Image 1 (tube, rainbow over the protein chains, first blue to last red):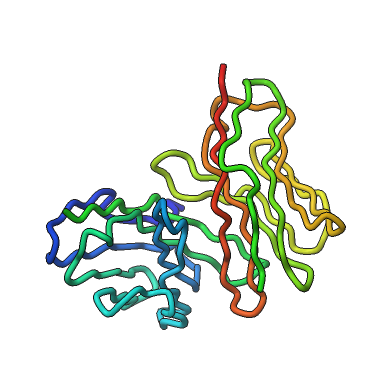
Image 2 (tube, one colour; image 1 turned 135 degrees about the vertical axis):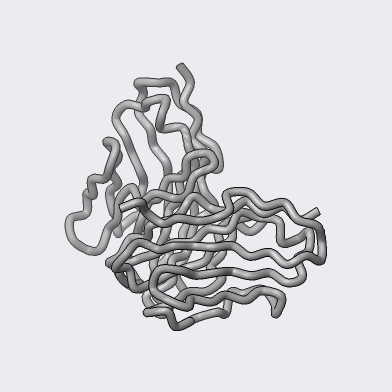
Length: 115
Length: 113
């Protein structure tokens, strides 16, 4: 298995532009997670899906952020409009389940820079 | 609420010497604990997990961690550091109420030749 695949690896965009981050989870994993990593705040869970359905989006910082999972093999995280404070590394992870019995498999991340 | 505290933000060791990365947890019940490693420009990789079975947990790449309830600790160790161990290490607890993973602030391990 190729693991969790994220694209692009790096994204540089101007403030106000729309940004779309993409993720392909491991086949058979029913759970998909989007995390954001910054120096100031560490790793934050933004949203997670179970069987393509959003379960908890309480970590989504504001309405400019949206996430979708149209099928079991693809998810997107969209920021519109983007702002410099959105600059961070965004990770996608997938898992067979949630909670203490499951480890998550992370992708390599998308490094977003908003100028 | 559950939480983890990583006691050192940076640890430096010489190649071939032991590694100790410290983590204390706070939980009102028996927690599920993990260690993840993040190499530069990479995603996080699961090293090992504790889920109330054996208190000494062996992970990948020669790492292990011991769950000590009396000390509320889950320290990560390795007998002999290798240059390839240089990375950021995260102690993680699973919140039983929300099933979310709660990450520590990370410990950056440097290994000198």
